Image (cartoon, rainbow, N blue to C red):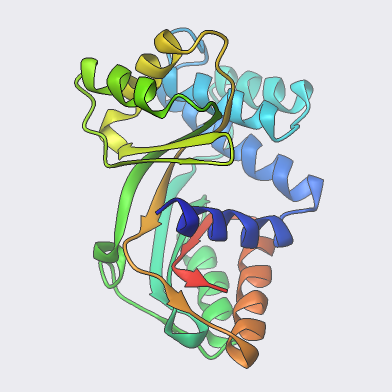
Length: 238
């Protein structure tokens, strides 16, 4: 699963290099998380983790603070989560996660990504069952046994753990996110996570090449250019 996750991260990196887009996506997610769970990171663990991830992705502090201040103000947009599923070029399974204040507009924009790349948007649940909703942690260490022992002692239901090139990748059910993170932080002094997220990880991969790959990259470009799109998950392997 680690390689599958890395493939997705690399493909997104190709299409998420515009800082303004990255800042906008984080700003919207921070605003929603702070508005729902409170603006204090100490009491809102989801917000704290999101802020840490934003900092790792080099989102400026003033962008983060502005989103929190906006949530504290009480006014502003009323965003809702919208999720779309379907089959992309080469029969790749795709999940598109959005935050929107206008579901009709967002559906139309996401649908165009499918239509213009000869893909098919599906119904709710059409591909979701082929993904695991996983907490994912990646950090530098060679102590795989120590990591696994710490997680087991904390009674974390570990899905998978990998060690490759001086880095450990841990997968656990998304419901175990905070318990797993705390166990790793307690075991490894001054641990720094390269990845600390909850993501949809594909159970099986679909290899694509040639025209399918070109069309798939077009799909990713179009999707990531949409303001309402927060994340795109897929099972493509290049």
